[in-house]
Length: 344
Image (cartoon, one colour):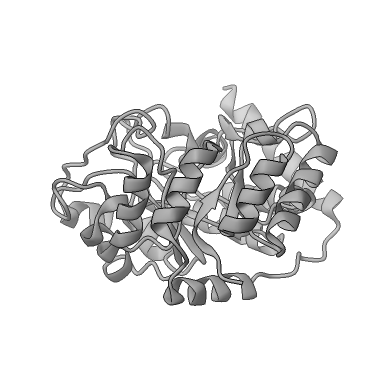
């Protein structure tokens, strides 16, 4: 069955008849969950099942379960996670690669992935491979995995490996790197004026090193040497740079197309992103009228995008057969040490 080149989000905790009919007709490639969709374990399992029943296939279901501020499944029903940067710096300091931090990040990925799969969610929009800097906007800073490109690369690889071993696909974000942005792209369009030569060896390094991951998400940032006017998400030159210079070979999806960094009607943004070369347009607010407009202008996935999707999802692992309680105990011991260090 052909799939639309977009990922949509349900509006609430259950799928109403109107939404179900729309999703059945529009056939999004996949869906994404937000906190508004996650009220209890049984409810969330029902919702993910209803979504797949509506489209008549095992459609991918995504979520942002990073930890810290950005985790859609929260207490009291689900585990709370330290902000990623806090965990890494507590175990590894600000500039070193620590075996304890790397192991903790792997376990974190595995435990998150296990929890997601138990609720019908099979893709996590993580890791954030952005490099934290002193000027990084607070909306992003403690979501990063380190303040050096080397640390971020190691920690992002470990988190992605943990998710993968749990049977959950990771999404590398925000390509080619959002760490130097001083504006919140939810509200305004950031511009990064550092030279590409400098960025290639710093901010872009984690994306180059992890370019083989099955999925990646674009950043709503302007890089003047690539395109002085359009953010990477909407720029053919920007997407070409991600593919040809950084080597991103998997499915490429946009960050949320309805964010304040972008201008114009949401369907115009979506069309521009698709024309620029993004494989999938991500729309997150659950507005049915906007989703309908996007489906109309964007249409079906390209043949190349379908091939990349087939590769990504056919290569998904069965969950590693382990005693989950052993992993939980090991992670708890490492986390206790991180909390102790953070309190010094």
